[in-house]
Image 1 (cartoon, rainbow, N blue to C red):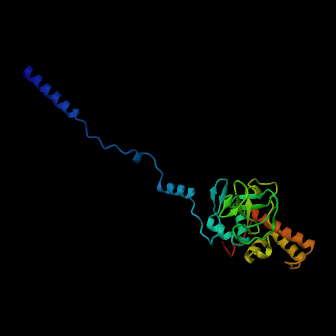
Image 2 (cartoon, rainbow, N blue to C red; image 1 turned 90 degrees about the horizontal axis):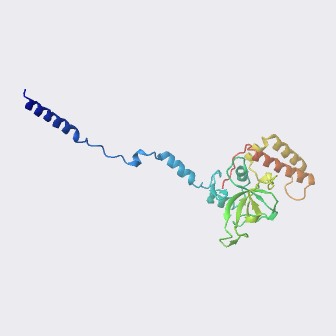
Image 3 (tube, rainbow, N blue to C red; image 1 turned 45 degrees about the horizontal axis):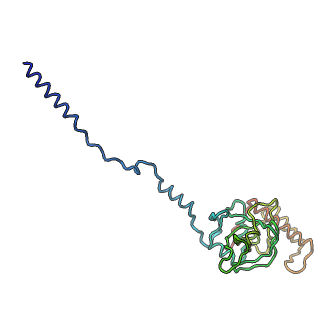
Length: 254
């Protein structure tokens, strides 16, 4: 084969090889960044939304949840309204029970009880360091109800199941050395609740001591021993509830 033919063949080969690599292969469409970056799953997003915006509980259920608002965690407004229309001593025990999320407040001074929500008020006196559960924040002048103090005040639940309206300066969130509690009236507790309380030996002993000293009296003049026995029974009930002791469900719910 002549040299000229060999050169022509070699040149043709080079051109053919160059043509096979000079045209780039068609690349795939770029993947959108949103498809490759990690995103919240539907379940995780749902859990986050649920945590940020807890659904309000309906009435007719035992209050177990609250919503954080500033320093306090408040029950659902519908529940608060029902709670403060009348006294709920059995529900109060459950709400004060150890482990519940509700914000506790403590009286900074003695003050007379009054209920701006329109429910019953016994006009008794709240003691210094008495423990309450914060139910609702009230502006300084909410709905025509004047609450003293620049920051307004609160509606709160007492251990006896009654609601009380307090000025902002009358309550603190700081736990005192020894928190007190409103006296619990045994006769206003549901029978199943009484039975569950008496399953505790200390409560049962205090109940029997009170029955002995008071001889069934609930009104009128009673002896000093009866008064002390009644106070002792209330104290041991509070101790039992604060420790997370067993309680039967109330028959009436707000």
